[in-house]
Image 1 (cartoon, rainbow, N blue to C red):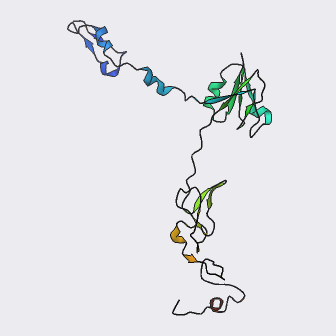
Image 2 (cartoon, one colour; image 1 turned 60 degrees about the vertical axis):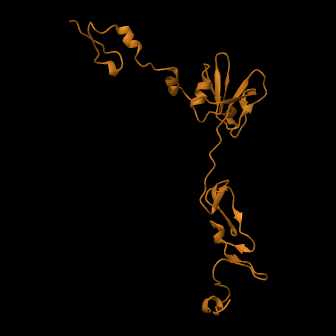
Image 3 (cartoon, rainbow, N blue to C red; image 1 turned 180 degrees about the vertical axis):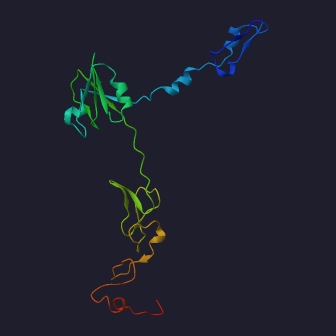
Length: 208
């Protein structure tokens, strides 16, 4: 009896042995799982979005060196820009192309060129701890008489006439009342011109 070992098909069929009672190898192979285009799509490079503007790419935040121009003698700059996080746009000619790295660049108006400006995804909003809010330089502490909860976009003023120390994390930390004719400050009264005089001249009373 002739025995044929099939080895160049998936592992589940690796040890398949053909005997006279096996009907047909081609019919068996037709039933094997086949990798589809949908599966192959997982291996494709992520495609970036671009906005067409008239002219070569110029300007932006770092306009020096023609907005960070790099010249290539091929037409593959879109693929380069897709793969390079620092690339902010490209121009393609007949046998050449250019990439750019200046954030915010745009076409300079020359009609023979088209600046393809990369559309960058919006940055994730910064989540700050309670008592802070997202400022220009990162999370910033709330000022006196304001408070914020975790993740708040801004600080909320304490309800009048309540006040709080800087960095208050809730309305519960606005316990102090303003009184007409007085300036409210956080803490027990200390210091002044005679701070050593029994805690700034402290007198204790058993009423309010």
